[in-house]
Length: 101
Image (cartoon, rainbow, N blue to C red; front, side):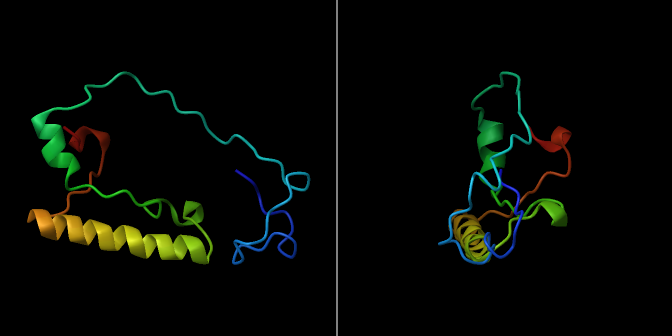
């Protein structure tokens, strides 16, 4: 990720402005190591159909910024609604890892 170090030269609301890697070099903020998992089961497939990917499902301080990201959030919500309606199913968002089959 890049940190905004100067709001004038690194505007969040103008995606056409490239941020200088000299002024703000990319930083590794995390590495994920996940154990092997069963790739597909009937129960998992039925559950997965109810889930939606949305980067806004985060702490407020970690939610995406800028007009491009706000537009993406609307697209995520619309595609989730369409998919759930088309499949005649209700959404199911897990509250904890143990809730996932």
